[in-house]
Image (cartoon, rainbow, N blue to C red):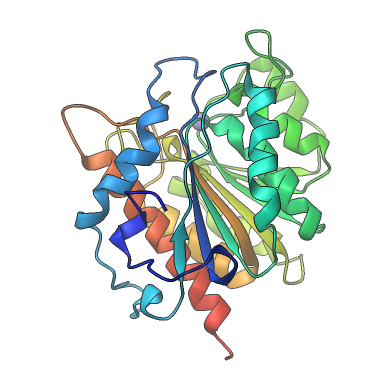
Length: 297
Ligand SMILES: [Mn+2]
């Protein structure tokens, strides 16, 4: 087992097949456009464990006193390119693909979401995607690759997965044109969430699905960079802590989250703020998912 694990939880005697939550670090960042460094995200997030309380003050419980969480060894970066890396990720998940697990990957750049979604689709064919990200990620190709982080949501859309994109506030003309008339991608901009009724509209739209299986992908640049500056491509006008938590609550209340990823954390030398916030968010997401799983037992 790895030397660093999520929240420093006691993982002794937990076998992967017994775990309720599997944490999968994927420190990959070969295609990040603006500033590299997300390869250091998983380790920084795991290092931030001492600052995160194990008690969830919002749900009033301690999720990991009841559920078992296991951190797996990281998937090494494949420097031949993101399509090769995607194949490695699919291969790494294969032995552990069981519906009982909640998968939680820590990136790394956002391109890792495609193989994660593809893998979970094998056991959850009706999967819907909730995508929290400042950017469109809808380019057909970027810097010579169709598997770049800048294309990842387009590749997932091509799989026919219904998509709810929250926090969007930066896209190209090509991406805007791709979005137009594409009913499978529902967008709730950062502005609509912060200044309007974006989350209420999202709740109503997601509510038209009956108990969906959900994959939740969080690019940490969905937060305002004043709150979380440590990310590869910061964008002004991002979501607040409580707006993201409210989105998580809507998602976990209305569906069954079977996979999560948290990407694009880029630790800064001058501050530990970003990795702490990312670690706390992952804890809050998993707590909320497990709370829902335990309700009714
Ligand atoms: Mn982004």
